Amino acid sequence: MNSEPVKSQALRVRRLQELPVQGKRALVRVDYNVPMSEGRVTDDTRVRETLPTLKHLISAGARVVLIAHLGRPKGKPDPKYSLKPVAAVLEKLLGAPVGFAPDCVGLEAEKAAAALKPGGVLLLENLRYHAGEEANDKAFAKGLAKLGDVFVQDAFGALHRAHASTAALPALLPSAVGLLVQKELEFLDRVIGHPERPFVAVIGGAKVSDKLGVLNKLVERVDALLIGGGMAYTFLAAQGVSIGKSLLEKTKTQDAQGIVEKAYARQLECLLPADHLAVKEIKAGAEITLTQGMAVPQDLIGVDIGPRTIEFFTERILGARTVFWNGPMGIFEIDDFAKGTLAVAQAIAKATKSGATTIVGGGDSLAALAKAGLSGRVSHASTGGGASLELLEGKVLPGLAALAL
Image (cartoon, rainbow, N blue to C red; front, side, top):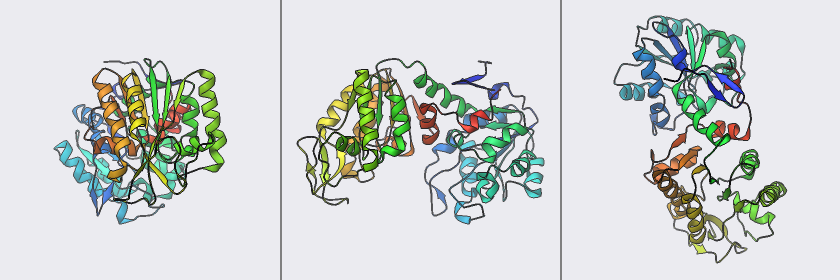
C-alpha cells in the first residue's frame, strides 16, 4: 500500500490509509447530490462511488458519520431536498443498517454520532439546510467538528466550493482525503502532468463561457482538440461561418478565435464540426436537415454533429492514448439529436478497450455514457464536473488547499 501523501499540483494531502481511525468517529464529507424524482433517488452512482471509502472505515472499526448536501434549499429546511431517501439507498448498497439524523449540527446530531458503535454508519441531514454551510461560516464548521474525531474529505464534486464543510472544517480535525478523491486526483493529475500521447480532448456542451478556462489550458497540452455541442457554433461564427439560428455567444467569439489561433501556433489540430443535423424547431420528431458542410442554413438550428464529423472525431479518438471528454455533442436528451454524443461515447469505450487512458467528466457526459449502455467502460468517470475542469485549468481547489500538509 502506498503510504506517500497524495500530490496534486503543488499540494500534498494525507491519504485515508495514513489516518488512524479505529474506534474513532470518522466525519466523512461525501457528495450525495444525486438526481431525485418524487422523493426517490434516480441515479445512485455518486453513492456507489463512496463505498470503497466507507468499507475501508467500517473494516477498520471506525464509527462513520456522513455529511453531504443535496440541491439548493437556500439555507433552510425543505423536505424536497432531504437526504433521508439517500440513507435508504446507501443501506441497500452497504447491506448494513444506516442511521439517519434530522439535522447535521446540534444536540440531536451529537447524540446520534455518540451512540454509534464501531463499524456503524450514520447519515446526517442536508448541510445546506443551514446558511452557514455556503457562507463558509466558522461557527457552523465548529458545530460539525463536534461530531467527529477525524475528518475524511471524499466529496470530489464539492472541492471547488469554499464552503464550511470543505474549506473550514479540515483545520479543526486531523484530516485526510478518501479513496474516491485519491482516484480522481490520480487520473486528473495524469492529464495535467504527463499524459501518454497522442492526447485528445473532446469538449462539448452549450456555452463557450463555461469551458473557456479549460479550453485555454488544454490547447497548451493536447495533440488534438475536438469541439462540438452548442459551443461549436460560437467557434464557427468566429471563423465567419454561417450558423443560422444556432446557439451563439456573441461576446465570446474573440475568445473562441483566440483558442483557434493558439492551436494554429502550436500546430495542433483544432477540429470543428464539418456537418450538422439542423432543425427549424427543437423538439422530438422535428424534420431534420443534414447540412452539406460547416454552414447552417439561415432558418435552421444546429442540434448535433453530422456523420462526417462523427467519422473524423471517432478516428482521432481511436488513435489516441489519452482522451479527456467533457460535454455532449448535441441535444442528446432528445434521441433524434443524440447520435453524435453516443458515437463519441462508443469511440471512447473502444479506445479504452484498446489500452488508452480515458477520462470522462461532467454530468451530461456521464449520462450519455449511461444512455449508450457504456457506464464502467472508460478508465475513469469523474464525479465532479466543475472540480475536474477547475483542476485542469490549473486552479487550486479550496477543499484541497484546506487539506494541504
